[in-house]
Amino acid sequence: MVTQINNITYRSDVKPNLDEAINLYSHCSLGERRPLSDRARFQAMLDNANIISAWDRDKLVGIARYLTDFVYTTYLADLAVDDTYQNQGIGKQLIKELQKATTVGCRIVLLAAPKAVGYYPHIGFEAHSSAWTILEPLK
Image (tube, rainbow, N blue to C red; front, side):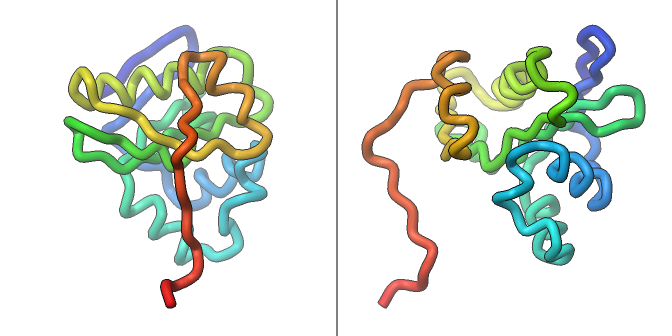
């Protein structure tokens, strides 16, 4: 799927290469929270997820990295937009493109980065009080 809006092309038919992705994440607040220096781990994150990317010609300027069953739940793991391209609707369009890739009624679930908490209600997301996470192995 390829969509062109203004000068930005949204693509689900290609995945950015590792260096393009690291460059993008290095130029947005999400990069602080991702293992950019662990190239093998970061490559696996890209390889094992669905990707919709936003491009300004040949420059990667945004990414939605997600996991989905396409009908019931989509976990939006990353929504990243290059700092210099923010406030242009790219993040919102990436989510719209993700919704086009799934069926009507497929819920999007995400954990917001601390600096992005105020963004999601602005575009229609609702907070959920019973989200849980675990990082350490169960005992």
